[in-house]
Image (cartoon, rainbow, N blue to C red):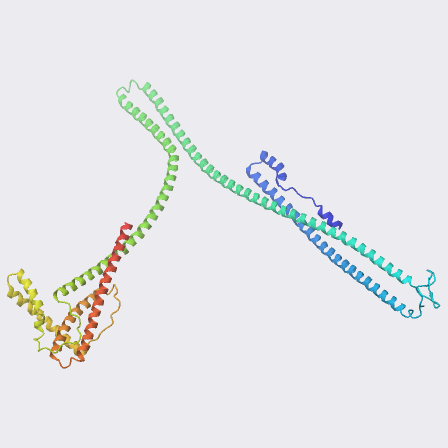
Amino acid sequence: MDFLFSCCHLPCFPADGNDLLSPTSSDGETDLSSDDGGDIECKILEKQRNVAYQKLSELEEVSNQLLKEINVLEIQFQTERCCRENAESLAVKVSNENKVLKRRSMMPLISELPENLFDLSLDADDHLICGDVVDLGHEDNNEENLLLESQAKITALQASVDGLLAEKLQLEQQVEDLTTEQNHLREQLALEIAEKEALLRKINKQNKTINKIKRVSQMVTEEFTEMSQKLELEQDLRQQAEVVAHQMLVEKTEYHGQNMVEMDGKDSGIQLQLQEALEQISHINTTMSDIHRYYQSQGKERMDAMEESRILSELRNKLEMSEREKKTLETQLFEANKCVAQLQTEVNQIQETQSFGAMTKELSAPPPPPLPPPPPPPPPPPPPPPLSTPAINFQDFLRSRRKDGVSKTEQNNSTPLLNMKAKAVDEMMERIKKGIVLRPVMKIQEEDTCWKDQKSQNRKSAILELKGMLDNMKRRDSSKRGTSRRVENSELLLVLQRRRRVMAGNSEQSSTLQGKLTFVLSSLFVCN
């Protein structure tokens, strides 16, 4: 217990770390630079962190010891409680047993007692009954003494338990205080760590700025050394030029003084030489001034070149981005143009098929719908070629109105048409002999439009020729019209229905292609 109370009164270090930092920081601000001050602050913070960790470890050890002692006290309290309960139960049992024994001891004496027992006044000292001594008060005294002793022990145990409970409460309060102090210390540690990190960041930033300044200073010193060397060279050149000019002037004066009389005729040549020398000197001065200006402007040009290089790099990046976007747009335009060309070809093919279908409809009347049961057979009709002559005559009539020669055009146009019709009739007869094979009509795709349009045109001409041939066969074979005519009519109906489906599919395809064309053109307009 003494150890617990001594541990509870541990010294608490200050909440803020500024108390430790204040003398060192004041001295560092006056004596050290910014870098040294940052290093010292880091060392101080590390020392404070180590001290805080040590105190935390001590607090943890103390708290563990407190918990162990509390557990021991709880075990002692439980044992004392069990002892008290056992003592109380034993005292009750002993009292009950004493009462039972007393009653049993008094049972054989009841028969020997006199009848007028209540009338007799017995003395307190006489306890003789029939010559026997009956001790009635000693047993009661022993029981009372035992009860008193047990009660005294119970009170002592209760007092000790109350003291232990009070000590336990005190220890719990101390543990709570220690936990609060530990949490407070942890918070202080977290704050100090955050401050340390902030200081380290500041130090890193300062180091970076110092490095940048050092680099700039190195560049400046290098430029300064270069400029100083150039200035020294210029000064040396000027001095040499001045010396040469002075020597030339001295020589000129001496030569002029000595040979004034002799060189009267050569004055013009000497003057020319002197003028050339003066011109050279002036030229040297101008070149020196130009060199000086060049070296002065070179620094500005370097700065301008750096800025221009940066701007050029930005412009190059922008150019690369624009070229990439341009390439993507060109690929999109190329694909869109391809789609437009495909759609235009498909539309042209559909328009050609529709125009060809319209021309065939105008030239040949549409087939009549199938009628219910036919009337009785008519007389035999004429041969099949004159059936298609009205269309030919109509075309010839139209052509004859445009041209003058009517008879020549009829002969020239009728012979190839008759040959074509004869060939078609022969082919249809062969097909009828072999049998008509009907194929199921699939969905029309955009890639097979041309082939299907040609197939539909061939079907139209074949259907018309089949119809004429079947009419002829009906009129010739009137006896077999019961079964064969129904089969042929059903086949014709199927062929006509398929033809209508094909025409409807072509119209739907043209509408879808027109919609796609409009969509592609709108997208191209938006892209442009």
